Image: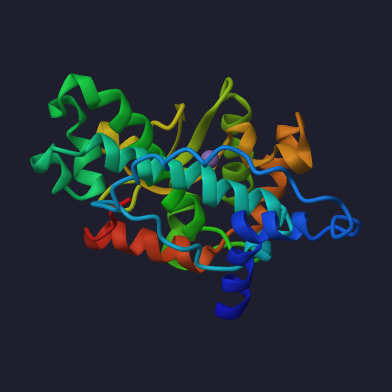
Length: 255
Ligand code: MN3
């Protein structure tokens, strides 16, 4: 698995560029005229305090509902730029840069106004995507145990839960997310948020959630959000989601 993942990483960026240059016929063509010296590279983004963790599986691990190219673009560029922009916004903001992501998002109103929107969008996006990658890579099915009991108790049972969550997902206008939140006593609720907002901004912890931005599904599904929303259940990792439910009850769940 680790090998496949590393190989997947190499398929992006530089490796793709190199293979494009190796197209047949190019060897006979005259070399390009020497051009002007390349522009100096822009200042590198700060490497912390927040980090863009590797995906916990290969890009094609969610192929049953999300294609590998979408996974790669989404993780590498969409999520990657949010981490970089979050770190940029926190430059020179030592007190806020020291906060773990969940505490930063729970204290948005204390963040200086000139960086608050950047923290909200990029910090929210970092939290949302970190959770999103974590809860996929599975084979769908149905949860059991305490989580199943909570779904039956709070969300009307398994079928009703899926229907309600899908309906909520379809009701998000434009770009946003559908979530299941979880209280410290393990109680569940379905909520939606616009943009990259995260329920942590209102003091609620997230059990699970689905990315309803078109970049999450457009290559395979184009405008057909309902097909994506219905198919997404097939790649959920219920062991991991059940573990998050347990972490919420134990008080250790973060983003
Ligand atoms: Mn996204």
